Length: 496
Image 1 (cartoon, rainbow, N blue to C red):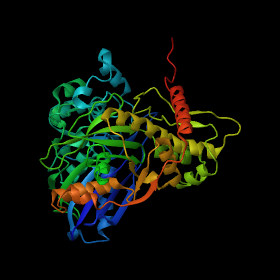
Image 2 (image 1 turned 90 degrees about the vertical axis):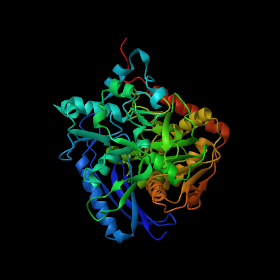
Image 3 (image 1 turned 180 degrees about the vertical axis):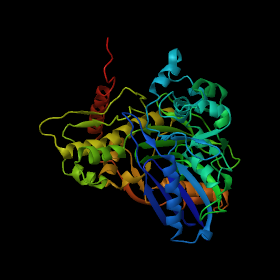
Image 4 (image 1 turned 60 degrees about the horizontal axis):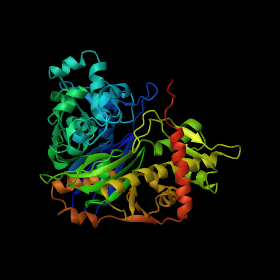
């Protein structure tokens, strides 16, 4: 393949354009951050116009280093559950985007659960009623913005996750679509029909008229209408974690990966079987063209890299995120300190919105190094919980765990992870496999590669970490971690 495939990777903290060649090698990359808006406790927003501006900037930045005529296709990947509601005529949002971490819909979720409980829609959607997902956020915007619900009923508004927002902008409003992976994160899609579910729409309060069309992940969605990529086909839409699964070539049932970024996300491919789990999410892994969809079990961990950012930005004990490895390595162990970073409650496998960040085991001996090490270990123990749940429900034993994401540059973290799991951990040479998987999907849609078998041969690793911790000590520390989690729950305490 002489042409390049572009991946527009819109994440929680930044937007990036990456160009890959036929060997899956990164040729050009450009990245820009955007603001994190926190109007109050538990509230997280983004300026959707700023995200669109950053997208245009990184496209221009990257293409300044190459020829736009060399780009055969563009794929879009995105922070999945973050939603935008905008005016069809002007293309302007009616409210800031509400981010996946946001918890403002907690009361709505409790009301909807009622006597039926949080699993009211799980059989249809694969998801529990939780603030994490997109549908309730859309309903909140329609109710909070004066006149929005009436305007939606009149056909004046559109909504979608960030992939839909960027596709709308790139095509100048010609295409309003999302893909099955993003739609499976809304609490609004039926996993069996791959279409919007009328019962879920009615329960949550989202009118079908404002929702995008649900399309395959790898398909020709439209053409870029403006900018240096004008005329380029948009050939993939895929949620970030499913894109990473694709980028790790986890195409067979039982293949698993975990991505470590703002949060951490374990996905185990279950093939064409929809495997149910009370603690994990049943989600769509991908759909390529007209092929049947494949599914996955997902363990979503809300806080991973953002806990390191907290050490940097709020406590000031490190100057940059990369400093955490040296600080954590300055001590032999955690000194008995365990950190449960439940800043937005706990996601999988517990789904406890009443959990709060908790540090236990502090003594006068404990210092910054112990807290740094406990922060890294928190990501490892949370991963252990979701791996145990996934393997039990899917009936598989993982031979290894493939990992990617910015945090994996930390070799101490990788060793701690292998020790916590008792499994080999294989680190991808390409840290941002989200972008690579998006390029793979877009390339398949334009026949840049002959098929998925060819993609597996393009993967390269740059480290394999074998477990070194004795099994008895591993289980003892895991039990202590779980005890720490119990102390993070029910906060503030309920009054009798």
